[in-house]
Amino acid sequence: MKKVVYVFTSASLVSGSVQKKVINQIRTLNSSGCICKGLFFTTENIENTNLTEADFIQVEKIEGSLFRSSKQRTAYHKAVFGYFQKYTDFDFIYYRYPGAHRYLLLLMEKLGRKVFFEHITAETKEIKLYRYENEFKWNVSSILSYLEFYILPLFREWYYGAKIRKKAAFGICNSEDIATYEKQMAGGTYPTLVAGDAVNANDYKIKANSELDDEFRMVFLKGAATQADFNGIDRLLKGMAAYRGSTKLKLYLRGGNLLSETRLASHLGISGLIDFGGHINKENADLLFDSIHLGIGALAVHRKGLKSTTTIKSREYFARGLPFVFGHHDPDLSDSPEALRFCKQIPANDGPMDLEEVINWYNNLNYSKEIADEMHAFSLKYLDYNVKMQRLVFFKEHLNI
Image (cartoon, rainbow, N blue to C red; front, side, top):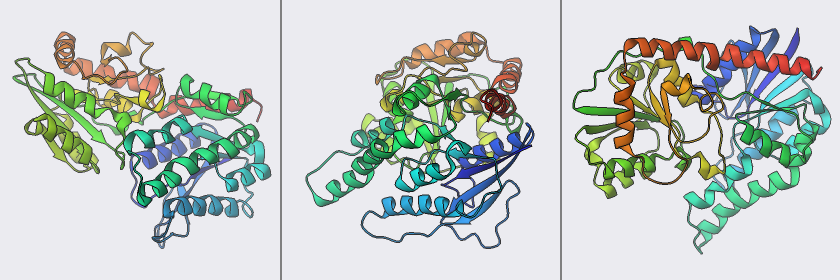
């Protein structure tokens, strides 16, 4: 059996949605013909920390200083490079792409085709979102922030990115759109596998049947700690403000950074239609979803310059049996008549969501417990980690690596 090390460089002792995804990938690889162990690099205190799927690796924590975030990123890259100067007991490294850097290029020069990356976005396009979310101002703070979070990351991708990709075995991409971007970044010499996000479908409770009375209830769980304009929640809020139908609207919005959403809701005069709250655990999420009619997926990934991608959120909705809307091409859903029975793809633009059209679609769905069960069965067949990771194993065998 091949030994695979999964490198994750934004780990925490308390698992968020991304880290849970990584753990599920490790578990599935171990049941798909590999021996896989995670290396979770973190700045948190790892004393007496134990995880079956991964070992935690301590990274120096950079305290408050000029360009602190950039220096912290360098510390992570340096820690990974230093670790693999001594550790050699592996066949391959599965690396969740952390952004280009000099130390990452040095690692690739040492290990080359022993490394394959997972790309969840078109990196330079996402970096450029910084301009959209942060208006440039002629003051010291704004200039320094643009240097740290916009100019320097773009320079690193331009200067190191192609060389890093050319030395890798291949890249795993969330969509054909992202795969095309990654190949272009490497000058066309980068094998890619389009696999997309997945879920462990059986980890999610199938929701109860919620009758649609006089209130249409929607949910969005925001995982990002940043403004994350690519979620496109502004489109939903503007649609709620424009809605003139007879059915009452209620949005349950949960997350750690809802400042921009709170301000916009107030500006639009719809704060009373929204139940704001912080992050919730799985048990409370199960209770909340039982009363929800519609899940809200990502509505504006086109702001990243993407037409197509996959998201964990949409797959969680499928596993729970919750109908939902999303605003982009999804390779697992958009081309599947079976999938599109249960979810609605809306146009990829910045306009308000047409909630009257969405509610009519939901009513025509005639939602029932049987539909919830069918959605869960679809997620097991097409969206589960067992399916996605098996494709990765076949791809590696096809490349003879």
